[in-house]
Length: 100
Image (cartoon, rainbow, N blue to C red; front, top):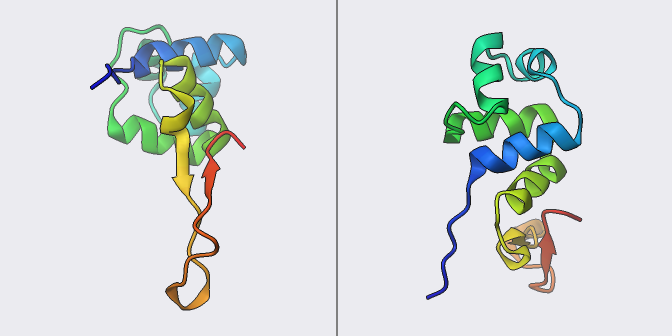
């Protein structure tokens, strides 16, 4: 099985630099204290599941897909099944990308 390890901390740090997001802006949008936001964006904190959840609410799925890609996730790992239609029936069974 191929190595699927990703470094979310590195992905977040790179994303913040690329998008010029400051620790103050990140803290305001995520609700974290400035010191914790600074640690996360400088690669000194651990990007936890809670951090990822707050990030999703603050910046959206496209930003999450970007962080995951920058963290080393393969594009096929960023694909979700299509949402189910009314009545629980699948709409064609196609897949969609988080980055779309």
